[in-house]
Image 1 (cartoon, helix red, strand yellow):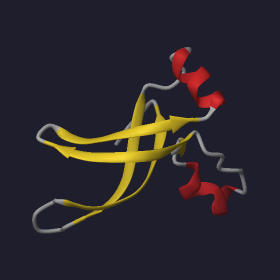
Image 2 (cartoon, one colour):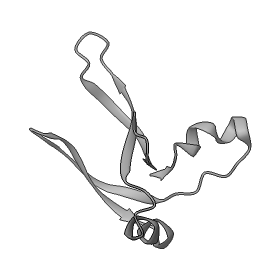
Image 3 (cartoon, one colour):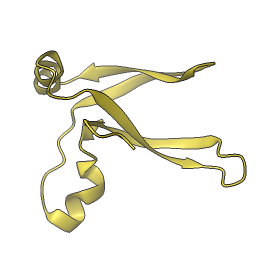
Image 4 (cartoon, helix red, strand yellow):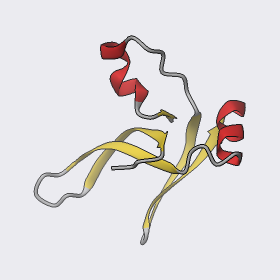
Length: 81
């Protein structure tokens, strides 16, 4: 998990893409895909201070069924897609 999808933009903007945390478990449930994240100290503090609210995943999906195929990465963000 990074911040604001910076991993996707780092090459173009030259900015670092530090980790906010690492997903160590995923589970598919009736109401969505759930994950357990081991947050960095910085991310934990930012979440506690309510500086970030959402997790926004980057994934591939089947074009016909819209079924998620692979979760590539995720980001802390305040404007999830």
